[in-house]
Length: 112
Length: 140
Image (tube, each protein chain N blue to C red):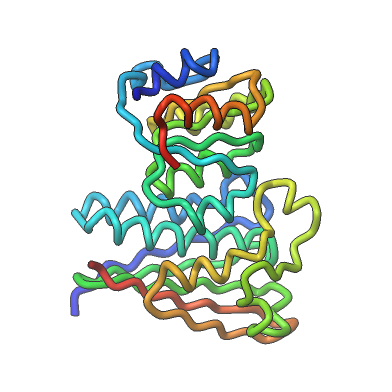
């Protein structure tokens, strides 16, 4: 699927990175613990999280991820949005909870 | 041997900027055409080290030497030092405070991750004086 499909499936708001919505993605991971993302993730392109600080964007950047989805209706500070924009990372915000958001993407074909 | 040497001051007071040095190294390696897998290993190992310097040691200095076939990273701080290195290397062991955990770190994965993504790792630490971590990543 594309990031545009993620937006539609999660009824998400686009915070930045509109120009990258047609990028193809195949896998995702969900975590609030960035150390675990750095330890266990391999080639996942989407990160779903409830954590809002700039280190979420930096972690995604180190892992070459393309898109971050903030769950539970959370929105980061403008500083975080600007950082993601400068790195070409798409930021989305959805009202859905982490488990539900992951489940929807998984059942629609996104792998782990 | 020809080597590119990069030096960074890691600001210990600013959690937001933690990762700046690692990002700069990542960008440099990418521009040099180093294989993406190797670039990522360097970036993750150094990023974990940088985070450690900020959350445990009030910042410090990072020196990175890029050779044609590898990267050597020296992370030097004047923090509290590590009392028991063997224990600190255990996955899940952490002395991080609750406030650090709320930022998404402090899971006790920092040092194990640095070991996992590097080919060589040495920790030289004296309690009350500081810690120097050496990381070597060989390119694929």
